[in-house]
Amino acid sequence: MSEKHLQTGDVLPPYSGKLRVFAMRFCPYAERTVLVLNAKNLQYDLVFVNLDHKPEWLFNFSPKGTVPALEYEQGKAIFDSNIINFYLDEKYPEPALQSADPLRRAQDKIIVELFASVQSAFYTAAYNAQNLQPEMVENYHKGLESLQKELVARGTKYLHGDTPGLVDFTLFPFFERFEALPLIGKPEFALDKAKYEALVNYIDAMKTVPAVKSYYLTAETHAKFMESRNKGDANYNMLDTSDVCCMRPRKKKE
Ligand SMILES: N[C@@H](CCC(=O)N[C@@H](CS)C(=O)NCC(=O)O)C(=O)O
Image (cartoon, rainbow, N blue to C red):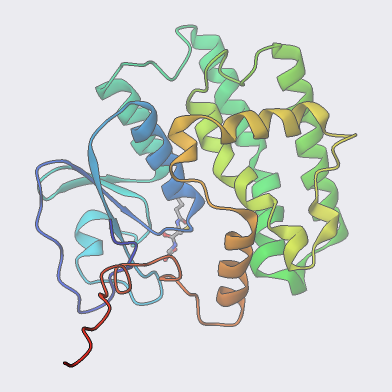
């Protein structure tokens, strides 16, 4: 699969009949949807788009021009990672990624809601570092400490249970990116193994889940992308190998 990001003026690839996700390779929200599709073993196509030069047709699928959007039938789409993921879990119930208990489902949503301040500190550190305030770093650690407490209190390998669920796939894309912050000069965002032992073990376990492993990118790769975006020239296509894969050595002239 090409990881090339289509941009303004590029043609929409033909619809294959599979579910289709409009994404950006480094977007944590789009990753949430990819992980859920993987966990459910669904067949899908990915179309990556350049968010600085959006293809005109992106707005037919995502009126706000954000990713992810899911084309569930030709020309028909829904957008927003949480909306898409709840839809997928209801439409394709196996394996179920939410608890059967309504209270536990509500508690999972609260975890995601409380994570918002952690996410917001991350975004400021990654892309708007000049506005980073000490209380944001504090909120980041407070949020992670209470998440770790919740994980320990649940006593399961993942927040969902013995296998990961929607709540885990919703948070993980951010954990993947947090590890890049110390590499771009933000050591205060590192997760100290002594303080965050349970959380770090949980993150490491998530990395081994097949649904995650096949889409996971290293901290170094995320750091490279962040640095390119901070320089004003986001390198969307840094993973695209479609141009170099098929070059054959030239035959020598006789
Ligand atoms: N709440 C949305 C947020 C999606 C979002 O902000 N995606 C970013 C990329 S990571 C985006 O599309 N940005 C382009 C823009 O805002 O114009 C979701 O969960 O899907």
